[in-house]
Image (tube, rainbow, N blue to C red; front, top):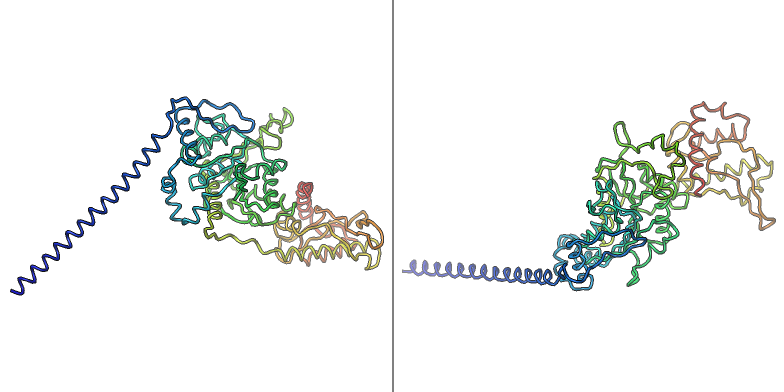
Amino acid sequence: MSSFLSNTSNQSKLQLATVALASAAVTAGAIYGYQQSRHGERLNRLKKSIPNPAGDAEPELQRVTRQGPVPKLDKEDEHNQALAHRAQNGDFDDELILEQLARNRVFLGDEGLAKLRNSFVVIVGCGGVGSHAATTLARSGVSKLRLIDFDQVTLSSLNRHAVATLADVGIPKVQCLQRRLIAITPWVRFDLRLQKFDGSVAPELLGAWEKDGQMPDFVIDAIDNIDSKVELLKYCYDNNLPVISSMGAGTKSDPTRIMVGDIGTSTDDGLSRATRRRLKLLGVTSGIPVVYSTEKMGEGKAALLPLPEEEFKKGDVGDLAALPDFRVRILPVLGTMPAVFGYTVANHVILKISGYPLDYIPQKARDKMYDGIQAFVQASEEKMIRAVTGGPRELCIGLKVPIQPCEVSFLVEDIYKAKSVVTGIPTKLVLIRWQKPTRDILIRIGEGADEQKSSDLKLSELVCMTKEEATRHQKDVLLGEKTLEELYDAEIIERVAKRQEEIKLYEKYR
């Protein structure tokens, strides 16, 4: 009897559990169905509320500086413009935006995504690198984008541009990006500037957002002209504007060699090397993150194509450029590489703005070495002046040598590749004059307590040697009677001459 009662009780409990589970499943299904229904209703309301493209209103793309001809909007453009107009006026369900950004939200967290959605980013250069960076930032939640570029979409740029189509050929690149991105993220606000960047317009182009006065949270340098690039980076550096610079994607093919590091560490990239040299002469040796490639040139790899000889015979090849100082030769570009550079730049900006942990490659710790080399130059110049003038030791008290640590870095790292020009030894390096001066190298200005004394020394007069080599060079050549030909072979003398010519090209930027 007890066994029968026990079985009956167990069966009742099982039935109750089954009913409870079934009830929970029905309830959960109902809740989910209700949520999906509400979600569908919101989407339908949003779609129905967008004005009919056939209506009277004809929204326009933003007018930009020195606007060229704009193709007539098709129905898709009108639809996208109408949606963007509504979204940017607050008539867009924020839950839908958050759903579109859901993956970023769970990765960055609510606080990180909020910072990104409230950010303002300036992109200078909207070609292959810049267009991919802009597209990624818009898709990731950045709400304000200022796009700066003077150029138009061309057929040859379609192999690397992020969003341009055949229909966009001939229109400004900045307008092309806005035209395509509002179809993806209609809530993003754009400020389009059809201008070439240079130092004279930097305060305007890198200034505050007009409507609310917000300063840029980040600036992206995607320029491929060295003069403009240097002016942009120097302005950002001087004005404490966060900036990241993309170096050369042209002629590169290996995405595994792309790095993010400080401007002082990017030694193998041509554009980076030229930019770094110019910045060092302006006093900027570090503090600017860059995206660059460590890939080296090699046999069978692409290279900058030479200009045909017949073009040189026609006259000044500079007249062939779209703008003064811009390249006139074709740069081979594999379409995938600007995209990788652009995504890497955008990734850095997203992580920095959102506060996500980021391990940064440290700068080479060589500041102490540069200070030591500068002190050696100072002592060497004092000895030279006393020897040439025959004056007392007191003659050189207060002597100034016109060489800065950033210029020491430029000479040692960029010109002499951190090696002795004599033996190639990379340790205990110093800088010293190459030739015995044939002019008076002591410059005196003023008199008495107000007198200023300095050494007449040019960058191109210095060479890099080990300390032991420099001591012998000073004794035998600078203070002695030996000639360079007696102490060094022709190969070393020719090597120094080439380095000196290279330095002279950059001295004009001091």
